[in-house]
Image 1 (cartoon, rainbow, N blue to C red):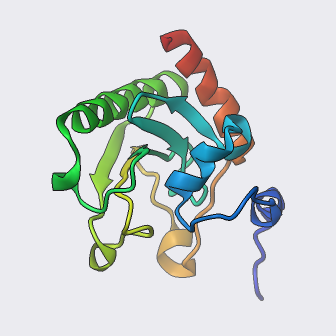
Image 2 (cartoon, rainbow, N blue to C red; image 1 turned 60 degrees about the vertical axis):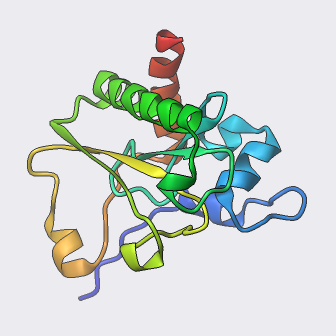
Length: 165
């Protein structure tokens, strides 16, 4: 018997229109739209921003990216490197306040061979983790169960961002 896991909230994301001509780089296109709630941009800094991952590993999976399209870490200037690391730290604080995870995975995939989905634009992943959060669905079904919609995640995390401001 085949099991079906419904996620109807994903259709809104899949079918959403884009304004203008997209470049194919969400880290350029979405900030340019200036529709932060629609695009799940949680925070804008001077040279980098924080956004929800539209294909999260867990609820609260965030990404930190520079506004400038840069493929590798050594191409970032000191101001970008400093702000990105400050935003990664802020993201951890926001996630701790809202989700109370037991730990975090924080990392960067440099290049396609390393698993970068957008290899032309470096970005950091901040993934909250809980003891025992790996389940059989990922192992045997090649499927992840995300218990919360992106809209609900955005609303919850914006509470922490606004308190931190």
